[in-house]
Image 1 (cartoon, chains in turn orange, yellow):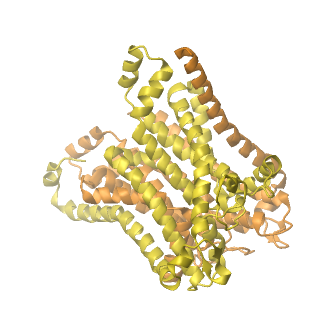
Image 2 (tube, each protein chain N blue to C red):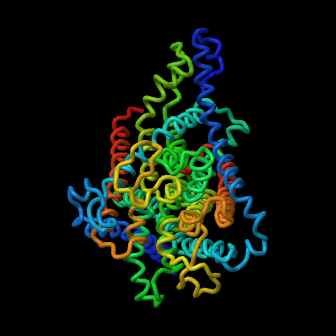
Length: 281
Length: 308
């Protein structure tokens, strides 16, 4: 077989593999949209579940997921961006820095259900928060941390060194340089990373199973020490735990969750490409 | 990053602010280590009593019947491994070929279509994929492969394979991208075809990055919970032989997720579930440690790009 024939066969196989990867992704999204769109109405989004969740809407689950996502942001942003600034601007090449990097890689690799166990052990039981929004937010926040750190660090490292040199030579201190020069330049990249991290947190089920999620709670949470329903867990419940559940409501819930999560993805992509074009360095 | 002389030039009144802020920022950095320690510490705290209360022969036995105080985790561990192995067999060829396609072969327009779509896949919540697996994939498996319910290890592997794809593709593609252009030029100049260049030069040069990609993919697959719980049927039996792929199986993650909500806090069953968490933590820790070693050998800069 000639080299050219080998190449043709290899490239054909590789292209075929790429198609096998992509087509199901499109099918999944199209299928959920097609099946779920019929269930979507104002009543569905803004109503409370009724008759054992077999009728009515999903408002408490939507609100719960929004609250948890905000809680996650409050935990993950200061810690994550702080750690990223440390690694990019302050850390020397020593054992401490290496230990921090190893810790971040391992945080990123810990299974989500293990975060759930940890949240149960530490926040729910040891700190006695109970199954609550605060326990769930802390658990999700820690899970999101590695994503925020690594993307924020990359954004900070991408700011050209000459920017820092100019600021320092004009008499700026290190922190002034970081606050006035580096962070504003790195902001779009940091925001993108934060949104992608929150996107993951919003769709997660396993970390909230034992820390916050309520099976059925047809009212809105009253404080951050209250339980709440959440969309991902609600979808799990109505697709496995409730017999005789109308498929319409299942697909509708899946669609709302998918739209919520993917719209965050779209926002992150838009911010990234907008600032990449605007950037002058 | 900045020069050391900046410290001397700094006006004195700023020093306290600088010091306070640097301390805060360093604390944020160090917190990553503290959290890993906390996570492991709390798993040990809640999981260790299981090793005291349940004899090891029981704990690593072949049967899991918590109601009868039989806590053999072997079927669960093997279940996790079987599903992960199946996922990798499906996922690796597809992911590596796609990474090569994006990095080396694809025209620009195809790259512009592929990359966002793969990001979409990474963003789809696992519970949505699990739901889809139940209502759409399981019936297909039942009809075409003759498995009685369609909820089988194979169904789980298939779903997991797609969930691991974005991780493997993006890390492997980064590795392929990082191969210097000189290498390709040299190979082409020697008369190699494009494919020979990819196969004999680019892929071997990107080897360490590809190993990292595979390791992260395996870690992702072992730890996945909701999809696996919803599509594998959750029968806790030893998965032995190839036909185990077409029977229900139960993983550690699914066991923890399904049973933790129903156990009494402080009971033996509760502690055993935490012990399963320890085993799971250690398995992913080993997989990640292998990746970390490769990362650190490849220089510190790569670490940041890993998890993006």
